[in-house]
Length: 338
Image (cartoon, rainbow, N blue to C red):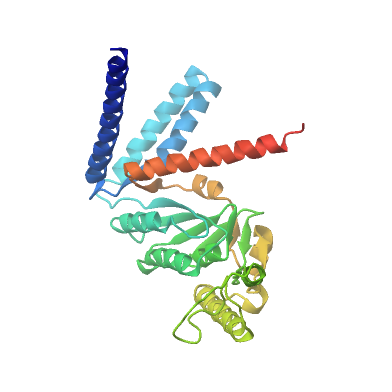
């Protein structure tokens, strides 16, 4: 009798567990179906209102009640006069702000595409676009696409400024050079107009352990260098030739947008700090993006496109974050003195 009781309890637990798993699967499938057709959302933040909020909070701490009343009265009168003067006239120009921060694969180019498509539906020649670029570069094709997205703004005859607060090197500078104007912080890293490629080769290690590796190609240079096969001088020479061709294309691209640059001097693969880059003509002014924004007398709208992740992606990201936290914790423990 006791055996039957324990078996029944075990069976109930098993059924409950299976039911819970099925419920999770059904919820995930429903969330995935619901997410189809709405891949992302464009968010618009009015930074002008944000700056006004800062001003109001500080003034309420710094000014007396009489000063605040006088200030509010003067501001309302000014707003009324401005509204009367602008009645029946076209709207004033706006500044659109976009942030682009990416790694080697420039995965954020999808968000950039959506943000630019959105602003081009309403932006006019009297408006302006500021893009804050932060990238040390990466894959040529990915950053080439990102630069092409920025060129859409120029083709629409809308003034484009690129701000480099930290780094815009290699592919990052490929994007920056498209702008009508480039501003950079004094110690921002700029330049690196060059191309790099590196690949490990394990052929000797495989031979040492009597491991054969076969690779078959159609075409002499379908694969120039390989990680596991035995490389030869012809493959190395072709690989270097392809790098040089890419470098030439990179230089031609930069020259198209900044014809005044001395490419023999700046296209060496070196990078410079903002102050040096200004002297070389790589940037036009030494200024942070914050100074640029605070100096604006127009409405500032920040565009941010956020991709909606389905349940599987959210679980994957959560797992990835857990692994990262675990790795950091392990590193912290191993570095701690014993």
